[in-house]
Image (cartoon, rainbow over all chains, first blue to last red; front, side):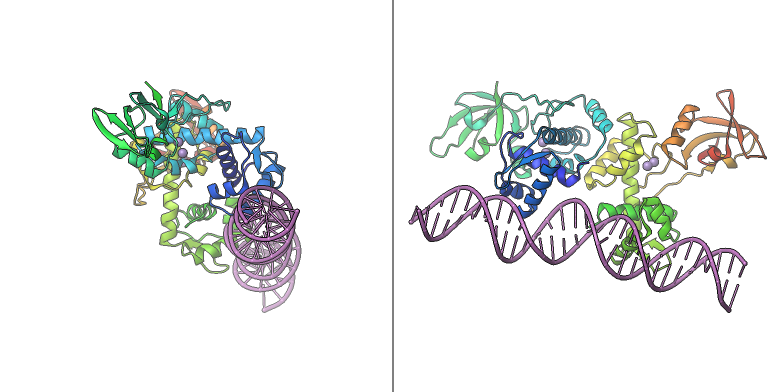
Length: 218
Length: 218
DNA sequence: AAATATTTTTAGACTTGTCTAAAAATATTT
DNA sequence: AAATATTTTTAGACAAGTCTAAAAATATTT
Ligand SMILES: [Mn+2]
Ligand SMILES: [Mn+2]
Ligand SMILES: [Mn+2]
Ligand SMILES: [Mn+2]
């Protein structure tokens, strides 16, 4: 049995280690989970004893196959719930994450199976992130950061890297949503800001923004 | 802040005390929650200190106004989720309770408000129990136990008293659901069993069954 | 290579909620 | 009204998860 707390640690390790590829440090987990390094040390030892993680003292931690499966399952639940909140309950994309953080821990195979069907088997969540299937397989589309697009490229917005409420509200304010088409009309070498055109209106976004917006070339 | 455990105790006190009217004993709570009386003593003291319950040693416990509000809110959430599971996710009425036990603890005002709207403001859950409104008001319909109906009464099934999976499956097996019309064709004084007719087919149900099925006279 | 700084672990304490065993209060029989 | 049975509370222990302070290991500077 995996406790709610363990699930959250496993999820953090998964995300910080880029889908569980890389080693994750104690401090990184502590920062992500807003807890103390000492607490992380204890928990990481426990996850290791339970077979969810590989851990050697002072050497950081990775997830085992079993741990990754748990992580992917939580991610699947989290993103399905985000779709539900967005599409069925009219939540805006900056409101869904916090509620999904709670809903992702509900335990019921059937619930998720039926929810998936009810939502018509969505492939991506409202932030453009892929939803793992029942077997944990993740279908990733090829996307680039807007900061990597070239002048005159026409792009379609397909996801966000930062999905904080602040960033999402910024995008809303400027009329940028998933599916929005935009053209790169200038790149300023000095500060790496980018001029984009949406619906014939042109404006400048900073490199920080461009670095957090995923697009695909049209 | 009310913990998940506290919520469950408050809910138990609410139900055992008939919507918080009566005093509830330590042992009754322990039995309901499948825990030990000593644990209940501790918790009840804590609920009392926090202002959710009135409690005097050895005298049992009742909910305060604040406690009742918390209880009613959990019941509201529980029943709305049951409607969701039943109507949108095709759960049968014997499967919904356990999942709703988890979902009732999700904290988000907006979630419940939107869920309520999405379900088109249902007044009763799939077991026939009333759903409290946003202000905690409960609209109860006048229903009687089938055991109290008279011979030749034509009744419509409007709820269950026992909503255990076993009982609900029994009802399914005999074609009894909410809204089912049935006629009482005989009452046997010896064992208080009742003969009923549904769709021109007649069969006998024990007093135990009749005592757990709510009906209204057609 | 030493000295210093940073990261990580350990030791011990605290909180929440649980349990067992024993004591105290209340209820029921005789 | 005593004796007995039942219910309830208390005392002390335990598990999970957290924290602070100090020690140990690793990394970075000089
Ligand atoms: Mn999210
Ligand atoms: Mn998301
Ligand atoms: Mn229920
Ligand atoms: Mn119900």
